[in-house]
Amino acid sequence: MTAQDQIKQTVDANDVVLFMKGTKSMPQCGFSSRVAGVLNYMGVDFADVNVLADEEIRQGIKDYSDWPTIPQLYVKGEFVGGCDIVTEMTLSGELDTLLDQNGVAYDKDAADKIREANG
Image (tube, rainbow, N blue to C red; front, side, top):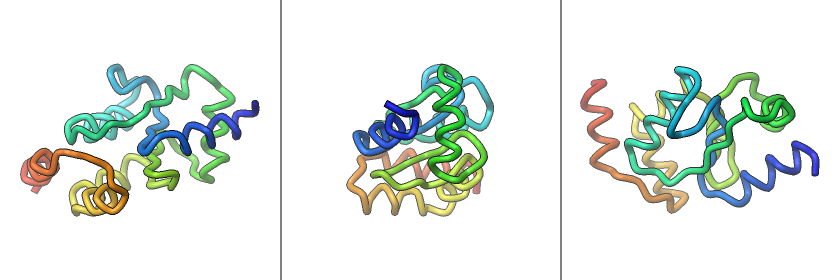
């Protein structure tokens, strides 16, 4: 199975996937830590893929999305973006809307607290 096949299978099999440096319990870079932290805090059930564990996946995800940086968030098979985009979407409420539209459970109060703390 190629890296592209593996990535597609992972994205298709999980409602929410974060391709990141490290794991959701032990991120290995600040940007990955921020996105994983937001998702964890909001109680989003997501699969994490540690790109540091596999160089083919690390490069493959950049090719798959045509996006040069990691982390990369996918919701219901669709590429959402990286750290800056996810941060902006969280603060604007767009992430809530995206999760709602896709039937992904999350803690709305936690999302509101993030916005309050950063308002």
